[in-house]
Length: 299
Image 1 (cartoon, rainbow, N blue to C red):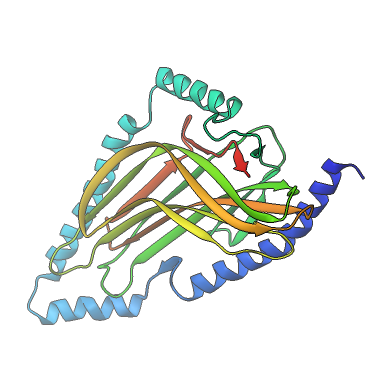
Image 2 (cartoon, rainbow, N blue to C red):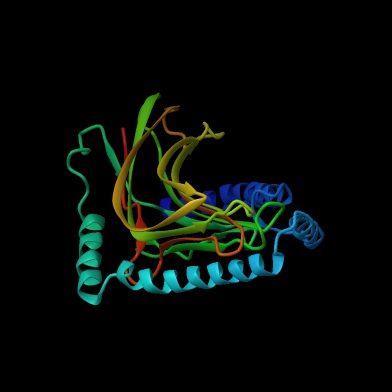
């Protein structure tokens, strides 16, 4: 068995345990109401009756709720085309991404610094309740998209959430026993839309989060570090923006000489909405939108 075959075999063996833990975590979060759709018809009916008993014209309020939801759909249709760049801009962006993938950051290079490329990719989707291994390729960029809309009044249910995480896996054997510093640079090209119109009689809310996490495995996992890339949230909010940025993060761990080491770079897209007409989207998939982590610098 050559080095490449050995790495692939070890990666698949490591992934078995990681995938099982990921599925268990997703199931636990869904059962706890942190992920998925949470709605109770009985609770919605009770809240509707409470509004009616307060002397409110519930039918008129429900009509306004439907109008607000239609207005959100119209707003999304209006702002999205400007967020999805034209063909010429997409071509320039793709060329820049390819140049990044072929040109390591010389400011991070050095005699004691190894430059690693990913040996594997995985994607975890809360809707699918699973972690999938991406077929091997020369690509260092991945597509990711999450979008969700709430339902009902939002006060006693009607909340929905979804999370997608992309993992880049790197491997090497340390030359010395010492503290190692791993530097990752993750490139984001995509967009975000958030919309919620909260009123005194309902409970509308949306949230969008992007984060980067890193962990190292050498005989055992060393522990996660986490950094925030984007946090947008609000009850009365109407926003849309491009996200074209790069984030550089550092992870440190003590590693033993010659023992196979795995470093996992993960980015998660997390969206949440509650109440009819509340919608949120993180799109790193349409056209040339993507997320890239071409290199890992270790030394």
